Amino acid sequence: LKHRTFSAWRQLGPPGFLLCVIGCVILSPLNPIFLFASLALLGVFLLTNLLVSVFQALTVGKIHLASRLFAAYLCIHFGYALGFFTRLFQRPKPGQYWGG
Image (cartoon, rainbow, N blue to C red; front, side, top):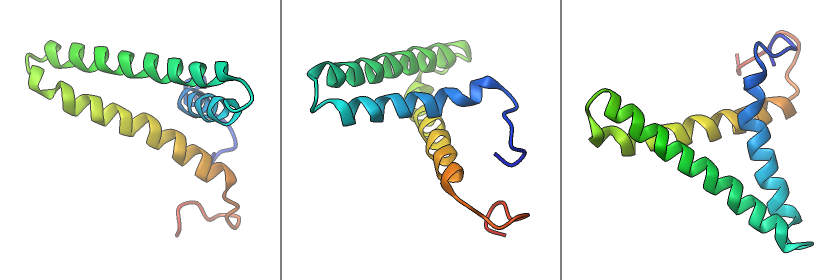
């Protein structure tokens, strides 16, 4: 949060998703429904990711790219969420942003 604000609410999607999955996994020993909820969240995400990857690959007429798109979308979304939380909990010196 370099400017202390969000440029769009969609930026909260990947971190919110990851937080929900981790929260459900942590709470799963208390009640098995949380384990099912985390599996359902991951399942819906993976299915959506797969469908979008196949659609995008078909759009350009290169179905062989679907698996690469699937992996890329996973990396993008989870990487964004992990980077968001890493940066959120960092406390850099004023004026320092990315290790400079």
